[in-house]
Amino acid sequence: MSANIIKINRCDSFKFTISIQEKNSVEKHLLTTNEAVYFALLYPNQRFEDAPLIKGYTFEDQNVKTGEIEINILPNDTKFLSPGVYYYTVKLQRGSSLEVINDCDEQEEVRTIIERTKFIINE
Image: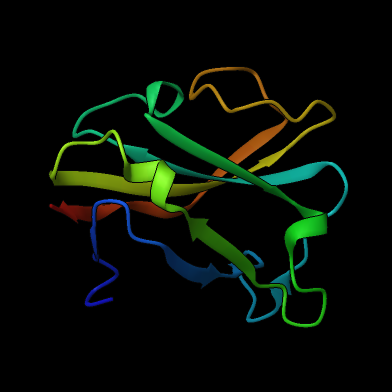
């Protein structure tokens, strides 16, 4: 991943890990039972909640020793997407009801972990 840009072939598998830093600290944040991380693959200028691919991860999906979460792109995730430039982002949501984030919903807290970054799908 050069400059965090992801390039994959359509229908290929791809995995990468993320970790969440505590605000104003070098410590890694471990998810709790009322938190979730969402990965979204978006068209340019598309709203988060309208993304063609959104994957959610909870405290059960993290490595409890390192705090890392493995984002797993499966062949079927890109099967129906046309080759081209997309963007990905990752958000942390805190709240009592963990549903897919709507950018403007009144959640207890939503924090962008990874800003929109290019995700290129080749044929």
